[in-house]
Image (cartoon, rainbow, N blue to C red; front, side):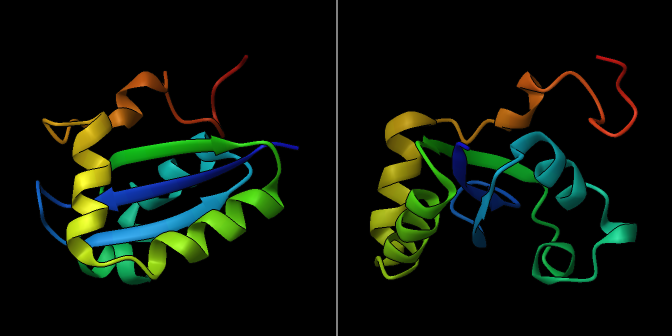
Length: 103
């Protein structure tokens, strides 16, 4: 099963949250529904998926997440900007709520 490491933010060079999941569409949608999310991302309004990395397994994703969490903030920003220089919300590639989509 593939895994994903992702970074959520509220604005360019804003607050960063690094997470890991096996279902990126569902997880990002959960972050975007603050009424159902009482955690860090809701508190800081981290509703933009600014970085996404797919790995071969969830174990690889967890290892990569730990690695990124130990990086300096500047390195994380450079990583984001190397793939997403305009800090666009990458979740726009997902069609809709994965819990209600029919296919």
